[in-house]
Length: 375
Length: 238
Image (tube, rainbow over all chains, first blue to last red):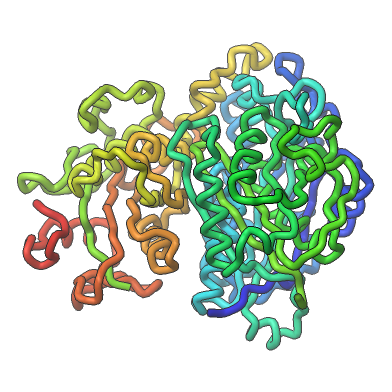
């Protein structure tokens, strides 16, 4: 079995561009959630989202192109034989919005495959490529599939790129489902009342040990385990028992050859919705004794949907490197089940392994075990 | 990796079937017939009427595949995975939903339609109906319409699932935003990791049945439907 190394990362969110900017803003407890500028939000439950202000301006085509441009920049060098897996739930859905409103627009980013083609073309990648769609677990599953390919020796270099936009399409939908908070995203807080959306993009370049050495790249950490499981319970609500998440975490730990006590910290999905956070705490209580320190970044950047698994994997690697968890922004009064384990302040951690989990519509759950570099 | 094919189900403009009684699968363009949950289930499905054409066809073909594998009834949830390859996914639901949200400030946005604006929701509905707790995701379709099958087989090869329902689903009628030719419908297979004597093989690049290389969905289905029962003991039954 080949070790799976993360050798390069990039991220763009409402908290800025690049991993350092995101990490520093998270440590400072800042939030990128602000009133939405790009569409009229009067009819919706909330006016807040984690938008990247540079994407607000109207433009021909999809905002997705500008998001990709921000993420990849001008000089990103990825080996041309690298396989590409993108993860996006709604791709360039802003083009479909324009089409429904009878506004002239190209329709060249509305399919997942078009996103993968665009990113591959932008980077000059000649390897195979495809998009994964699995609701809010999309990027986590994409990372798991990429890691499996490298572990099995079927690929040496795989780029995973998660990306999704804040659009009126998705905003109105979560509002119609009464899933949006009207005030703030407060993961694991007793007063939480819903999620807030965000947009963002992130990439992680995964390589085998051999390719790392060949290309003289340093490892930023490893993906040591992964698991994917379904609740088989409800389309838009999680299982109250957390059974799917428990299965996914157990798979991931087994794959990594670890026991729960080896886990130093958890980067939870933590949407700030009543049912998701309760489900996660139920699942973690059944898996861990005691519960390790945990946190969520969705109070800081919003729920970035198909991209969140990639962004949170990057934050997880930073957490392992610096041996601390960023504050859970929005948290005021922790749920009793998370008391002392989740904090609005930076938490110190100690260990080599961090769990990052995501769950989504359709009852899908996915989990990665991240391992500290040089551990 | 060797595997067996335990079941097949399809919904196309030219017919609905599960390989029973010598039914043949025909792929092609066209419009799907009106679909009802009673064609696939013993009891009415409470949300089937809300599904878009993609979800109806995909859910129906999964149900028929599980029926033909005798896995449609259950008392305990099973660690069976679900993977679909699609190009257009739920675009019909996307268009229908946003027509409710685009006007009057979004006050008429339909939560029921919004829930089906993810192509993976169809898989979620199937997982709930049939108690399937394995890995589940949507992958881009590819030439030959085998991407969902390949991804399903990869899950087994990598040890993430022992049984996966994998297939293809695309419905290209009734779309305003995309006009595409090509086959319409859904075809799913119940795939089970098997012993070294099984005739089906997947090595991550080539799908083989004996010495025959399978390069497209129609070829795979034809091979499955032609397979003598005795060739794969306990496998797919006609």
